[in-house]
Structures are given as C-alpha cells and as structure tokens.
Amino acid sequence: MKNQSILHNSTLLSIALMALAFLFAAPLHAQSPRISVQGTLKSSSGATVDDGNYDVVFNLYNQETGGTALWSDPATVEVVGGVYNYYLGSNTPLVAAHFDSTLYLGVKIGNYELVPRTEFSYAPYAFSVAVAQKVVCSGAVGDVKYSILEPTKFAEVNGPCWVPMDGRPITQYELFKKHGISTIPDAGGLFIRAQEFSGGANHDPDRNSNSPIATIQADSLKSHAHTMSKDGKHSHKITLGHDDDDSGDGGSEDDWTQKTNVGVDITMHGGSVSMEGEHSHTINATGHLETRPKNINLWIYIRVD
Image 1 (cartoon, rainbow, N blue to C red):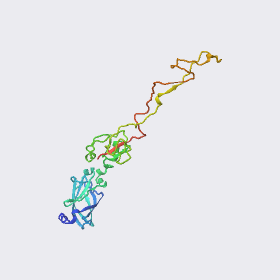
Image 2: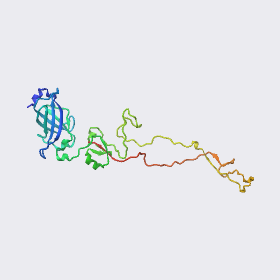
Image 3: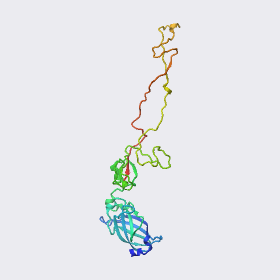
Image 4: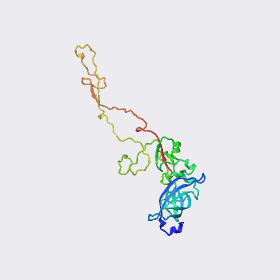
C-alpha cells in the first residue's frame, strides 16, 4: 500500500488530478446512497503513477477554492494504469442537505489537496429520492429570463434560485454575497435596453460603457421643431355691400359702393382685402399616456442564488 510517508519521499508531491468523471448515483439502500467517481493520477512529469493502493481523502466543498470541507471520506483506492474508481459515501455517509447548492470535489493525498477542485455534474444530485425530486436551478447567477409563467409556476420548473425583478432586497443570496448587488432593480413596466459597449456605435446618447448597469432612464421625446406660417400674416375675403337699386340697368346706383360696417375702412372695390393683426392658434392634444412602440408584456426574473 502506498502510504503518506512514501508519497512524501516521492515525486508524487505534485500529483495532478487529470480527469474526474462523475458517472451515476449507486445507492446500496435508501439510507446509504453512493456516487461513483473515476480519476486519473499522474506525476508532476506527466507520467502515470505506479500501480498499487493509495491513501486519499475525498472532500466536498460549497466553493471552488478555500473554505472548509462540508464532508470528508478517507479511503484507500486501487490505481491501475493511473486510473482509480471509487464510490463516494463508502466510508462516510453522504448528506442529502449538502446537495442543495453547487458542490466541488477535492482529492487530498498526504498533506496536499489536488487542484483544481472539480464541480459536480447534475447526475449526482439524483443520489436520493428527495434530491431527485427537487428542481435543479436553471441558468447561472445574474441571468435574466422572460417568461409567460407567473412567479409560483416559474419556480416549479426553474428552481427557487430565481426571483421576480420587482425591486426586492436580496442580501441573503449569492448575487449579493459574491457580487455586492443588494437590491434588484424594479423592471415592472419598463423596456430593457442593451448597455453601451466600449468603442461601440453609441446608440444611447445619454449613456456610455461606464454608466451604472441596471439603472432606470426617464422617458423623454427627442428634440424637434414644428413649422407655421411666417409672422401669422393671412388674408380674409370680404364681400362688399351693394346699393338698393337692383334694376341692373347700369345706372350709377348699380355700382359697388364703399362700406365701413365690415370692421375695416375699405378704400377700393374688388372683393377682398388684406389685413394684419394679432391672433391665436389652438393646437389640440392627441395621443395616450406614454410614447411606446408595439410591445408585449412578459414576466421578468433574475437568478440570485
């Protein structure tokens, strides 16, 4: 058996875990589920280690680096051609509650844990009936989704890691703990617009690539002008009065005569006059409560954990 003292005096101090494949859950019975793993051990030079038995400790973490192991399983594995197979949980029972979040497997030989740790694939999450029936969260932290499903129905198929973008505080979730976002923007009733990229086309003249993400921009209309007739000048056509003689005999009394009862002093015959003066125009308001393109309303969710 290859024990720790042998490892300390060999070139295996830099053993690298070159491959680790999670195959399937293999429960012996309801109270003792196990997960099959396969790994390849190679020396620092890239050569496979000698055949034989090696003492290792399998550790499960909820983070990729650092932290404290949630679970440990010391074991002796047989290596043939550099490859070993082992069932996690053979010596230390697995704990279903640990699988509520992403887990990483670390393999320790002697005083050294191999890096990098390996993230579990989804298959091991089915290692018990309780976990198998639990919805695995879709997407990644910070993703945004549109859906026609209301929040309760959405969580049933996408997992509890998603919440509506409704302005709620999220300090208990990973989106805050790892990325410092403490409150979700309230996207209710708002259109979503792509953030400007550095060196891009600058389609948004009021923002740039350094603008804070997920900030609300007030509605506005682009500056524009309307045209109207110059100085308000216009003309009125006024029909002139006629005398009382309608005989049509061509006499002097049949002529058009100057009238003053039309509001201006008419000094010539002809049927129309031009006049200037102050006046007003009334522009009637039209439209609705907002400026908008054709649209469809959907629920918007964000993954926070």
